[in-house]
Length: 132
Picture 1 (cartoon, rainbow, N blue to C red):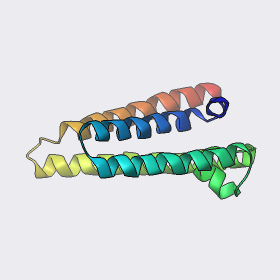
Picture 2 (picture 1 turned 120 degrees about the horizontal axis):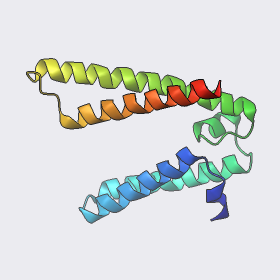
Picture 3 (picture 1 turned 90 degrees about the vertical axis):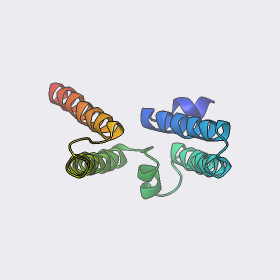
């Protein structure tokens, strides 16, 4: 349990989502997704354990979002930056496509996800500019 305190906030939340998803899939009887998610959790646990000990390669630690030093932290930040930009573009493209193809009625989940990502982006910009 002590190792969990050393995980990044992202990794803690990611594990909660994965385990929660496995429990939910088990509850609704989707056994193969339950198994797949639990295999993913086991893989992440091994990757996190290695990263926390400074083991593995720098790429594996950055991939596990568990950087060991400042260089790896900068690489992880850059990778998340690119991922966030692609997520915003993909969600906007999906929103535009659904709006055009469904007579101005995009799916509610797409609208909510776009609002969540855009809102998170806005808050992150505010925090980053205050720190700078």
